[in-house]
Amino acid sequence: MPHRPGLLLLPLALALAAVAFLAAACSNRDPRPIPSPSPTYRTKVELAPIDNLELIIRESFPPQYAIKITSGLPSGCHQFDKAEPDGWRANTLVIRVTNIAPDDPDVACDTLYRFVESVIELGTDFVPREHYAVEVNGKRLDFTAQ
Image (spheres, rainbow, N blue to C red):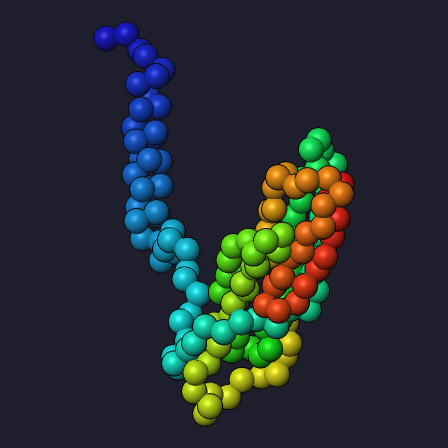
């Protein structure tokens, strides 16, 4: 029978594959992401405090606009919920930014105030030299389209 070098490597390759399979099967690591812990107390959705509004004008033609919103998380128990447009009222875009907050006065929370930045794209559909505004949770930013 002729000697074939490839046949000698076959048992070694199978043994290495078996060891790799067993190592993966015996691993205690779960490949799924760990979800954020859910609060163990009652929660409610509330408007977030707005700390800053900044207009972003992208260098394009026509100009593309966006608004950068800096909102607050008043305590360690507050979690950012969402920032979403709530519709146009004449030339004013209304945006709501909400947090998830404790709905139980007995919940003890630290008082570390944190910030969240959100960017909402406004698009390009603006008439040059026309006045517009963005209102976020009662705070207003006026601008004139270029």
